[in-house]
Image 1 (tube, rainbow, N blue to C red):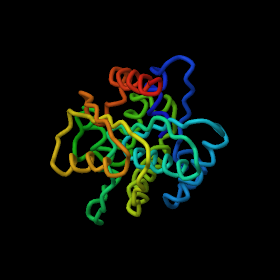
Image 2 (image 1 turned 120 degrees about the horizontal axis):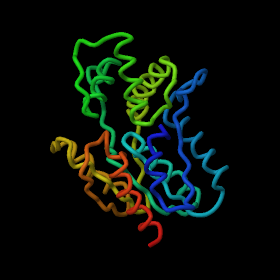
Image 3 (image 1 turned 135 degrees about the vertical axis):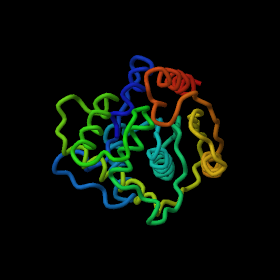
Amino acid sequence: MATVFKKLATALDVGRPVFGLQARGLENGEEPFSNLSEMLDAYTKAISIVIPNGPLNIVGYSAGGPIAHEIACCFEDKGRDIGFVGLIDSFLPKKLNPEDYQSKEEIIIAMARDFGWDVSENIRGEELYNLALSLAVDQGIVPLGTPLEWVDRLLIETSLASRRLMTYQPKTGHFDAVYFSAQLDDRTSESLERKLAWKNYCREVTYISIQENHMRILDAVPSKLIARMIDYAIKN
């Protein structure tokens, strides 16, 4: 969601405007995007209204990386100049089997543990949802007082995000990209291959190691480092 970029946005040069894109479905009464094409159409239209001319600098984190890359390709096809493209620990999607999909409980427990919280496998129901909400408030994703039903909308969107990308076949962009890689996570040959595969879909990719794990790569300290690198790349 767009709010995870708040720390990164505040660390960028003063006067540099930052616009976030939030998946539809997180607010009460909204219907989630049914597929990736619908999402891309909405996002490119919104960006065109806010920034109708000039080069575009686009950054995506985690599952937002493939979306940011695809947005850049869409605008490049329309003749827009693509400036900076940043992929923050974003894997190219892989085809998932039904047994690979996580339940809502598994998603919350995995997220909490990634943030260093000690969570029992037996936690369930409202206690689990309260944990997820506390986690989101603690990370500054939502404000204190956010209703508990927001968690269910978040979990639905998290699950849908993987399913939308099932049909994703990346285009090859004629632009450079910078990949910020979280180095503290367990690295397998598969994960490394999926990171390096971005070289096949950009003109050139520069890989930068960030000494943090995936879930904390946008905390205050790594965000400042990433922001400095983004500012430098845009200026040069």
